[in-house]
Image (cartoon, rainbow, N blue to C red; front, side, top):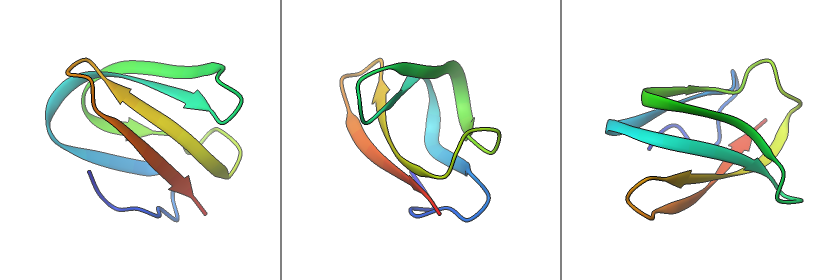
Length: 62
């Protein structure tokens, strides 16, 4: 996944996957399928990405 951190709120996965994004408080804020995760309409900050294969990553939107 890249870029981390992101200045525009867009992140790309290396391959298409089902994913969910959570706030640091554990609230699901977005979900989708594919290679692009677009958080540009959300507030800047840190989010948690969980993919359907069990990977968990931090997303930093500056």
